[in-house]
Each structure stands twice: as C-alpha cells, then as structure tokens.
Length: 390
Figure 1 (cartoon, rainbow, N blue to C red):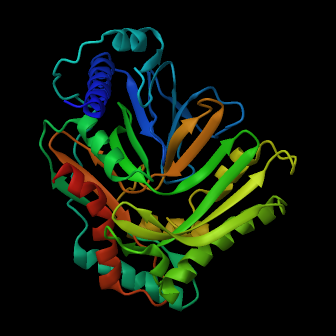
Figure 2: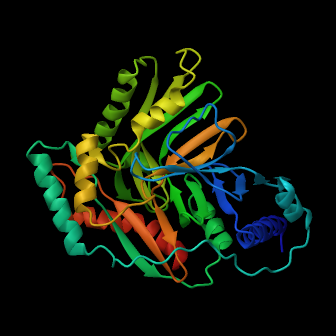
Figure 3: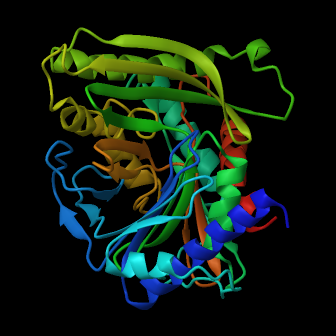
C-alpha cells in the first residue's frame, strides 16, 4: 500500500468508526467537505434543535439543515462533538466521544456504519408521463405571462444494497465531485440524506459575503473544452432570471456596492452550468447582518422554485404530487472556524434500509420542451445513481 492509499485508508477507518459510534449512541451526525477543499468535517450531537429563524451572526458553531418550504422549521445540529480530517495529518477532535474515537490508532476492518432510517415512502417514483404533463402545464402558464419561470421536480426510488457503506459513498462523492459541497446528514427527525451540490446559497467569512446564481444544464465529458461550450437562449435567460432575482434582493435592502463575476461555464460532476458570483464587503457597506438577511430573502431562489416566488411555491405544492422535504432546501456549516457556508440541497438523496430516493428538477420557461426537461432530470439523478449503483 502506498503512502497516499494508507492515508486515505486511515481517514476512512476513523470516519467509519466515528459513524458507528455516534449512530450506536443515538447522536445526530453531519459530515461535509466544502468545494475545492481537502478538509472533511464531522459534527455530532445528542440533540438537534428546531429553529424558526436563522441568525448566522450569533449562532454557536454547528450545522444547519433546512427544508424547501421557507415557513417550516430548520434543524440546527450543534458541534458538541467535532472531528476534522486534514490531508497528511491525523484527525483532530473536540469533545469526549470524538477524542476517544480519534485516540484509537488501529486501522482494523470495520463493518459498514448503520444510519438513522425512517419508514420508506409509500409513493411510487414520479412517472415520466406525469412529469412531462407538469412541464407542459408550467410552460403554458409561463407563456400566458402568469409566471416568469417554474421549476417542477420529481423523485425516483431505487433499490440499494442494505449494507451500503456511508463512508465509502462519501469518499466516492468527494473523489468524483471535487468542486461540489459533499454532505451527509443523519438524524432521527430527518432520516439520512447525502448529496453533492454545486450551488452556494450564502457564504460569510470575515467581512466577505458571497452568493451565486447557477442555472442551465448540459452534459459534461472528460476532455471537453468548456471555453467553447455554447448555451441556448433558454439557458441564458434562465441564468439571467436568477441573477436579476439576487440583484432585486440587494436593492430591497439598499445594498448597491457589490461585485459581480460572470456568467461563466463551470463543471459540476457530469454536468455543466452557467454561474455568476456576487460578493459584498460587509464592512464597507456597514451591514454585518447581511448573511442572515440575504439568506431569508434568497431562499428558495428562482433556480429551485420559480418566479414570482409566492405564487410559484403555491403552484408546486399543489401540482408536484409529493413533499420535497429537504430537497432544494439548504444545508451547511455555521460559524465553524468563524465562517458560515450554506448550499442549496441539490443532487441529493434520502437513504432508507434497502432503497434510496433521488430528487431532481428542471427550470421551465416559454420555450422549454418536456422531453428535454425529463432528460435533464435524468442527468442530474445520475450524479448520485452512478455512485450508489455503479
């Protein structure tokens, strides 16, 4: 075994041991790796707190897991136990149980970690016929001028090996999607969710605030020259709509000093997207609460719901035919090392004992085609499907 393999093996062993231990004592767990980072963090606690409002500036360190519907309570997992895995270092720990886990230096083979599993859903997967009909209905409403955009979604149930190893799946997601936020969240309240999302919602680090507009989807293949990628008018307009929504939020709170970068083509696993970044110096604008204020204004964005927001939210709840739960909500670390980074919960799945439920959506505007939107959701679901059923 070479050195890099040995280091990877030790991380996998400690992560598996940690998952086994925390599940066995009934703790809720969050594991994450931010985009373009080699650090893996694990937070665990005997409790998760339901909160109505998010205050990033005054929150204690922990992990936030929020549902799609903005009026539903969010879950906050305090980092009572915390392990951080850094490249070329033995994991560091905080908390009694975490410290005991890391102190064991053996690299024995361990059984796959269990998970918090809720009863599997009774609903069958969204049918192709139902989804295409919904896209057609959305397109007609946009054409009539009742909406600028709608983002219908669907879900798919697939069987999985009951012995599926969470640590191995997490490792595989990190390796395949280095530019994504990879996460595992498991609690008695939510069950177990995993994902690899490309979309930042809100980031606050020091005096710097950041958010992004992400829209448009094309398949990506290794070796593609992304500088030569072309986008249709539909995809460009989708991206512009999300940008305009972010700018309208800035205007609503009278923030005029912001930097805008993009749009540019970016790779997200097996997909390409258009992405624009927005940054604000909170010290220069004298707006230290900008993170919390923008989080409330932005979620759910037009990229996952539609525009106008209130009407889109009502329409989707009445016509999608299922409860999104935490799909297209948001998640991420809060005040970990004095930084917060929340991501839209896309490219995600909920894991049950012997099956997984995968989710995906597609933005519908006036010239959307139902068949293409169906294929787009298929591509998005393949992000995770090829990991859990290679």
